[in-house]
Image (cartoon, rainbow, N blue to C red):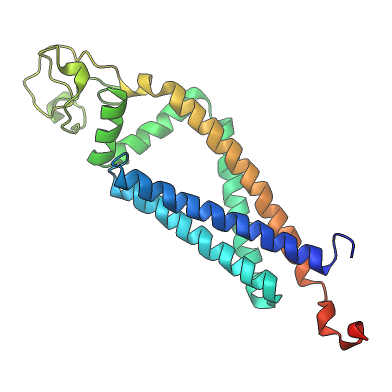
Length: 228
């Protein structure tokens, strides 16, 4: 049977969903490994990664069962959800690739302000930086938001107070701003995220197309005359 027939469409759709299941396991595994090895201490971040992995797993499982059983209802809902994911992911991927450096910094700063203390603590310890755009975030009277309490190595040889939450610091913090330390990482992260998101969005639209084609094909095994 030539490719494009019933068997080829079924096998292609099944293989695509097996790939999605593997990706979901990778997401869950990376989140669990990062939490157990204390690389990431933010439970919100770990929970978000695991939730994305579980959601992708169930969507892929729905598509796999629908492909193997040629189940019209499952394939219909799978097609609709996959198309909505394509629209969302394609839009976000294009936005990531189109952002300039200043827009990237502004977006990350908003995420920084909404992040938990544990997440900020992780970033400041890993990159040895203090605050995002302001180095001395000491108290609310200076107009700065309160910073997390973190013992930075770059402060050990100075009597300046950095990211401590105290209000009696008078000297300039010797630590770099996190916006400066993370500039290259932020730019690379946006490009990689946009590229990977664009790639997977095309696999999703391929999944929608092959699902529509597969639903409209007749199972040759359902015709008794095909075995005569």
